[in-house]
Length: 143
Image (cartoon, rainbow, N blue to C red):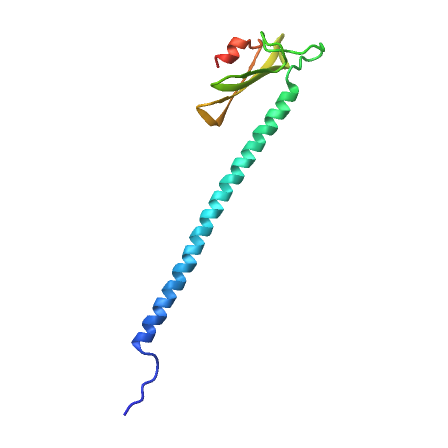
């Protein structure tokens, strides 16, 4: 009679199942790795954005009160200090102004306010306005 050569159907099925299990394992590892990479990239983007905001805030605050050439500090009208701060139950606020040049014959100032509200702690609100007048405390509080 004839002698059988090759693999039986059961052997092929076992090999197929083992291959599918291997493929599923590799796919699962790949998907979980992609998930970790996406989370890490979001963290890095948030860190970079936070760093750029802090850098912008730092360089801008260093200009706070600059008045051009007179040697006097500019203050938000009604504020005791060059940098006006407000820390109450609902929000934290920092505001200041500085000279940036002239508009026609009038001096031009940059008024800046940063605000963080309790109901949106993940957000930092920024308001910048270039104008020929300096804000007063009421303007800042009512932004």
